[in-house]
Amino acid sequence: MISVELTFQNFVIYSALLALTWRLLKLLAKSPLDNLPGPPSPSIFSGNIKQFRPQAWAFHQNIADTYGHVVKYHGLGNQAQIWVSDPKALHYIVVKDQDSYDPNIHFRKAMFGEGLLGTRGKQHRKQRKMLNPVFNPRHLQEMVPIFHSVSHKLRDTISSKVEAGPQEIDMLHWFGRTALELVGQSGLGERSGNCFSNPSERSMLIPAFQTHSPTVFRLPILQRLIPYVDGLGSPAFRRAIVKLIPFADVKSAREMVDLMDKTSHEIVRSKESSNLVANEEVGGGKDIMSILSNANKAAAEEDRLPDAEVIAQVSTMVFAATDTTSSALSRIFHLLAQDPEAQGRLRDEIRAARSQDGDLDYKQLDALEYLDAVIRETVRLYAPIPFMERTANKDTVLPFSQPIVGIDGTDISEVAIPKGTKVTVAVMRANRDPEIWGDDAQEWKPERWLASSPDKVANVHFPGVYSNMSVSHLPCRKNILLRVRWR
Image 1: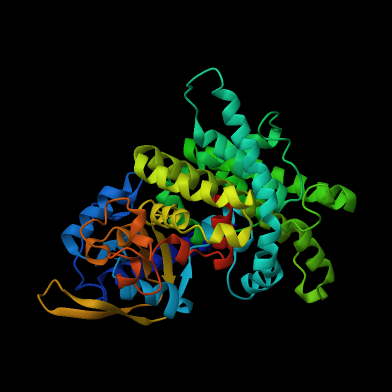
Image 2: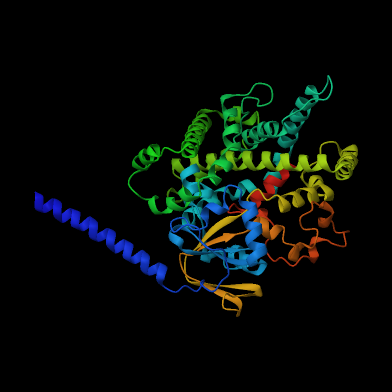
């Protein structure tokens, strides 16, 4: 017995030594990234990771001003990684050579399950194929009356609160309720308990979603560790381990996952037990969940989504629509409140269109040039996703739009990216780069998007990418749906 125990202990010790030796050899080995400029590492364990969050923008700005558009920084175990805001390099990462870079799906999978945000490869393509009918233009046109109905409720609710005089109103809160009602009707084919006058238990999702991003940003180390433990043991075992972590942010994230999972299961069960008449009362059976359910039933056995993936689509849909819509609308209204001239111009455009046609249809909304400019300029300057992370899934080469000066003083016009390298796509920095957008890059100027403007965006040489709306992991038509909701 003692001999067996010693043998096992020796195995554990030797395995640990081998792993440590392998890690040290990798750290000491020369990397193609070694000649790239970048900040020193403050930690052997976490490198520069903690400097990116939670107040990340100052660090992003500092490394861009100090080191340029392509920067080497250090991740877990001081591994060399790169931060990129060069337009040509970004175009390669998210468009031209996107198959060489995998999105970091592990944390999103842990949060929302194996939905569109938590899958890749064949599994992701199967889900996109199933959901494609949801985002075609004809279906979006049919959703516009629902959007008008919900926006009218919001207007009436706000109007009732200021009847007695000026009041301070938390617009983020009300936009959260609006977004939940929108996704409830257009996405789930139900009313979410009338989120304006009689909030349901589901309204508890709003504060949970609004604290999600700040909570996640405070967990950079955990996000980097999850890929290494993603397949460790059963889900129950991994959950038991998470429960042992004493940090408040981990507990908050776990509670949000539990709430979202519980809500998604309730929605799917309700959808399965409801009849067609009930569906037609809201969206005529043309909501996203009805389309997905019908398509899944009609699909061949090998193409059907398992229940867990259907539930994950609900979690993904509710979170993405609610969080993105409420934050984007709040930012737009805040900027308009600070710019009376832009506010007046937008109001005049909308009133002129409505005076002729009343509630506008899909094409009429799309024709509102200044409204479109306001939305585009807002997501340019205040990207809902300020940066994203990718991992090279093979050895590849990343070219630059202009050479950078290496540590040894030589010009570098491209860099070899080894398989496994983490790449940070600096969306917000690229969106605010004066070399790309001009000296007014830090200013909110919707007119830059107008065809009549001498500084129109057509003159900006930024191929393939201008904001997170172009580089999202979601299908581009999902971004169109979001913009229609915002309008």
